Every structure is written in structure tokens, then in C-alpha cells.
Amino acid sequence: MTDPAPGAVPLPYRRVVLKISGEGFCNPRERGIVMDCVLHIARQTVQAARHGVQIAIVLGGGNILRGAQFTSGQTCVHEATAHYMGMIATVMNGLALQDAMESLGADTRLMTAIRMDGVAEPYIRRRARRHLEKERIVILVAGTGSPFVTTDTAAAQRALELDADVLLKATRVDGVFSDDPERNPHAVLYPELTYDDVHRQNLRVMDQEAIAKCREYALPILVFNFRKEGNIQRAVGGQRVGTLIRPDLA
Ligand code: UDP
Image (cartoon, rainbow, N blue to C red; front, side, top):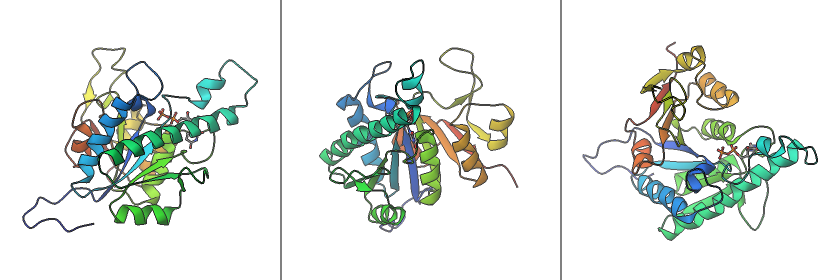
């Protein structure tokens, strides 16, 4: 990474993993890929990367297909098959995001956990780190490559293996609330929580598996709303948006 200019404010994060759900790729309550939505995310991320933070993005696929939902109520598709379909959905999102970012002049690499030669590079941890060191935005798709988990788990896994300083979870709500803010207008937004708070109050932040891994390795998570203009830049730049989940005190 290039050294900051003399007198520049040091960046709080050197490397981040940004998890973007598939719902960021389409309009609210719609499905599929809408390039205006993809460009909205691409613009903010490319701007954020220009400040020198290394960014790896883990993409969801829920705008196209989620394995568990796809098989519920029908038996002719094995659930594992549906999960592979979900993983492939994230590759489609990745291809769209890569082109959107490159149209803005960014240097990117698309890496997939399921080999798809001719479409994307295979995910190899050391190679991903090297791309990040060369200031390329790395887009990670196909989740973990294994069925029965979600891309939240993949994001936690990648954040740990790439030594990210924080896991930034971009969602459609402003952060972590005392209740579901889409159903309860009186739900309160928490600006900061510990993992212990999340556990004791049974708050929904990410998959249990993902949050357990982050807690075990004391990796902070910032949950924030990607639809608000400028929020991705704020989150990557270390500004306080959304809810910060910080490690428990020793
Ligand atoms: N998936 C999987 N293994 C992984 C990651 C994802 O099987 O490591 C499948 C799973 O079926 C999931 C789908 O891919 O529902 C799409 O990912 P996800 O639901 O996490 O997308 P998001 O909700 O973030 O858009």
C-alpha cells in the first residue's frame, strides 16, 4: 500500500472485508440484477478504495436464489444442489460488479471458491492477499464453496484468513436493532454492542456460525445500511455508521 501523504490523517483500517448481500443488486422487494444498483455500490466502493484501504468484497446471491428457500416445500431438487445454485448466483453478481467497477477505472480481480476457469480466478488465499497488497479490489464469489451455509459464513471465514481489521456487513437496515425495524417502528438502533450483548439479547446480526467465528477471533463487525449514499465510504474509512460489534473485554 502507498504511504499516506505527510500530515494526512492515518486510516483506521488497513484491510477490510465488505459483505454485500444480493439485495444490494436490485431495487427493494425486487429480484435479479439491476445495473443502476450495482453501479451505486461500485461507485462508493471504488471511491473508498482510492483512500488506500485494501478491500475484499464477499458477495451474496439472495437477489437471484437462496438454497434453503428454493427447496422449501419441494423435494425434486436436493437441498445441496440448491445451495450450489445459490453459490453460482453470487458468481453472476460478481461478474456484474467487476464490470461496473472496471467501467469506473478500478483494478479488480474476481475470485471464486468453485473453479470456473475462463470466468474467474480460483480463490487462493495467498493470491488474494497479493492482489490486495497491489491495491486491487478483490471480489470473492461462490461463498465457501460448500453447501448448507451462507455468504455471511464465507465473509467471516475470508475476513479471518485474509487478516482483515474488520468485517463490514452492508445490509438494507441501519444497523442492529432491539427488534425487527421493518415490523416494529419502536425498535431501537444500537450504536455499539459487544459479542456478549449480542449473545445475551439473542440479536440477529449474521448467521450463528459466522458470528461465533468472529467472536472467537475477536474480529469487530460493523453493520450498516448500504442504501444510504456515502455509507460504504464512511464504513471503509472508519467513520461511525450503523452498529459496531466489538470484542468482549478480556
Ligand atoms: N451458499 C452456500 N454456501 C456458501 C455460500 C452461499 O451454499 O458458502 C448458498 C446458499 O444457498 C445461500 C446462497 O448461496 O442462500 C446465496 O447466498 P446468501 O443467501 O448468503 O446471499 P445473501 O442473502 O447475502 O444475498
